[in-house]
Length: 213
Ligand SMILES: N[C@@H](CCC(=O)N[C@@H](CS)C(=O)NCC(=O)O)C(=O)O
Image 1 (cartoon, rainbow, N blue to C red):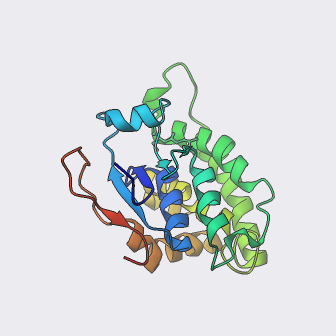
Image 2: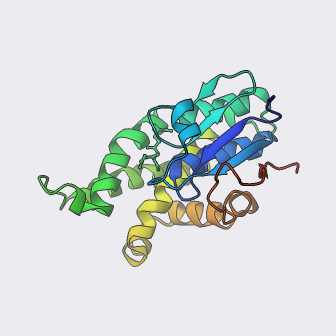
Image 3: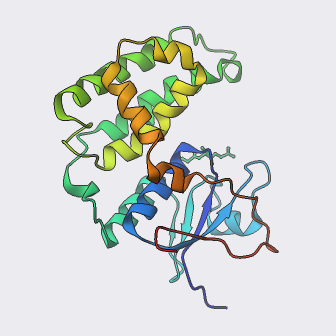
């Protein structure tokens, strides 16, 4: 059977899947969205990408893109109307995906790391947030005076950090970052990529996702 649209295996609340949906949406691509429950991954997703993480994008030619950043770049490489690729991220995304994610996981779920001392993970995260705050104060956004790949690739992780303890986050002396986050969360685009999706099963009807549907 020929595949009309790329298939995106996604999980609504996953920050990696969010960044992929953001870029797909901004690019104007249309994909078939399949919402995954992580403890009940579809066989077809695991056949497509045995590493078992979301997001996974299966293209019509059979190629598989199963890293969120690669999905962003694939989408924006086809069409990038808002010029997200207009500025280099200067290593901010790699730092987010490594050092910040490390601190975030341990701050949010210390019980998952019983052998480790997670007591300073909030502070380690805040050190990076402080740097981001300075960049936003200076540029308007993380690397430019308009939002680029770095902003969209990173804010879903800052959202998770903030949501771990909202009050504690709001008390931080980082007003530029707090406004940047709340602007993203209140944006039309964020709303458009966050509707409640039902779990996909092989019997589900096709659900198309994209700006132009
Ligand atoms: N490096 C991957 C990481 C993706 C990832 O870790 N996604 C999480 C969900 S947020 C996942 O699928 N975890 C597998 C699981 O929990 O079973 C990417 O950028 O796409």
